[in-house]
Length: 230
Image (tube, rainbow, N blue to C red; front, top):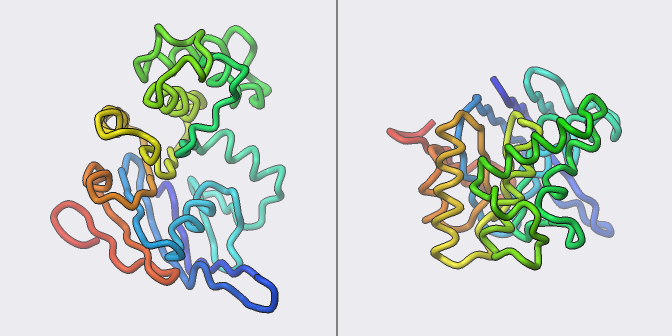
């Protein structure tokens, strides 16, 4: 099992009020799954993604990634896990404007001490080729379209060969034609063996996934796969 979440809760303090963002979630994700997470604002979907991405820790419960317990890890250890195991794709691309596409994709590899300069450059070039941007690798973000920027972001997510790709509203800033291109790319990555979890509020986007999880009031309200309910 790639991911196991057991009885996870997450609470936030806002003044004197306690917000129960997750209220006891159990979730298992196997390798090469393609999952969409949906839910209204405040449903817990973003909190769940933050926990899956090791950007936050649960209040109670356990999170196992590749059979390794992450709950008690230090911030430094979590940063290593994030860089090695998780590729992030964000709605707003999060590219550094002064760096070209190639250097943006190289960034996660800078923190991998066992990867030298030449190998880093080669891995970044391969990742850009994988998303169809060989001819744009020396362009800066302001020279790229929205779809090309998101392809650079996806290449950056792929470059460390992570265990899982987490995409947060990856088509939220794109027009319909570009959205279709990016979703087709995710479909292809899934066929190549990648595990993908994406947050979306759009049914048309969720239909590309093979499993749809709907959140409500900090709980999983439904977990639907092709052929029935999981």
